[in-house]
Image (cartoon, rainbow, N blue to C red):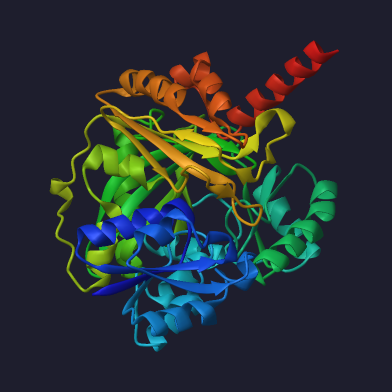
Length: 456
């Protein structure tokens, strides 16, 4: 691997370019009209323009990306996360063009991207799954029958989905009958596949995911991440290790993730996601993400492993150099997603020019961002503008350092979620790690109600 085309933008493109440079690999950035002066374009060795600002006319156009690879002489393509990162057809097209795709083979992406097939693979590997359907459900009648067998409440989930789209929680047959066509239509629009599957709704659950690395023959885990603090099923704060599970659960869950990787011959970095039932302590496989995750830095902080560099080495044909006993967790890390949104206006995105920016620094503070003076937050893309990641000897130390780091972060010209995250740090339930996947939205609803009462 000598020249890498980064088929993405924003902070993840910057992250990949830096890892590639550390390995002596030349980098090629791709840019839309909106990103001509972006950070990833400035950092790369060369730049190729691929189209207008809308992602559907640039970053989501596989032919444009492949043409950019040919034009620049790239011999490998890293998809980052989002966009085409889990599109099996894109991975196959890259391979067919004689290029190295930095990720698993197309067949594995397709297999694990289909939530129904992924559940079947997990069961074959002896990994517990949430009770539910084993095949995709295509109509309301079949869904009603399945829900009657599983027991209400149930979750409707897109078979080919991800990112929280196509998901509904229903508590009765009437709700299911109404929700099914909506969820199926949303899934068909987002993923080109309207099939749904049903699973038992776990009322009080933690979302815990295991970071894995595999070379197609062997696999290791890089411990787990706590990802329960979510808004509209989008993660807001992540930490590693999870403060809500015991050592026995951690050992069982990480071993299960490695078994799953070996079952499919997984080759790259990936994440195996689980729900942990707070009431019973049971954990269930829910899906696998066949790419690098937004929250990968917390796993890097506690392990000392550069996960993007590991991806690149594996893609270049190197066998996994790590044994499981080499992977040791130290301390505690927390990541905060900074978005250009106004929490007091229902998280309305706030595109515009960044007038001033000051990033936090000091020991054990890392900021992954594409922002700089005069950067423009575009209305065409995700509102994530930065990630502030901190490490401490233990969780209380990491929390204290988080307050300092977030307080130092200054972004003027566009709204951000920084102030809200500082508020969150002061909540007793956060400090005591007493939360599940519904806690953040409950707190936000209470916060909104209090503000509305004060306004009257």
